[in-house]
Length: 116
Length: 106
Image (cartoon, rainbow over all chains, first blue to last red; front, side, top):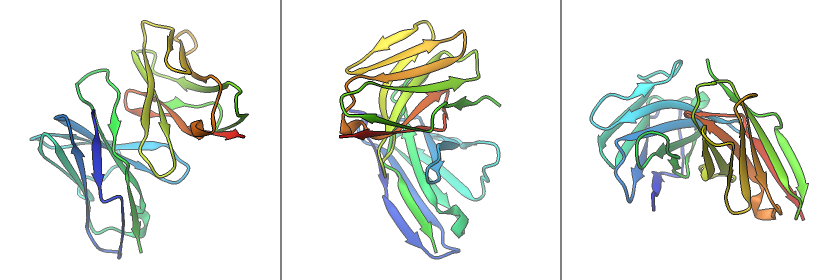
């Protein structure tokens, strides 16, 4: 149980394009989901916390107008990278917890984004 | 800000040996810690967790040790197998350490 699905798994697009990444909790409801960014050979960096029915909470230094997050249902959060540029190329990973509080996160398998 | 860091960025062990991966944290108020394993091109997978009211917890072939006095966390893998090759992260309140790449030599 506790499966998180992420789509697409990889995307290549031209500079200036906006790209949407979906994160779904398949067998549980997630009022909160998390978006991470990971550069090669580096750790995961928390970008934002996605809250169902309300605005996302962004970490310091993350541009909210650049990385739009929508959490419209208890099983779906989306991250849209707007007007993507080559420096936005990275591995984006989402996660969710089954319950609030001290619980492990369940991660999707990530989206490899390459901007040409 | 608070940080979670790792002592060793890489670790190479022989198949069958035990592995120890270390992690230091800075938030003395932290009460929950998690170890994740990340294979290439995939999201992290939960391995084991520990709450601050414990100093040791064992799973299948894995043991986590918590030393709150020196704010240190370790993951021990017994009889390391090739399938254990991956990057291991400690997580403290949504903050990940730098990660240790474990390579198991056959």
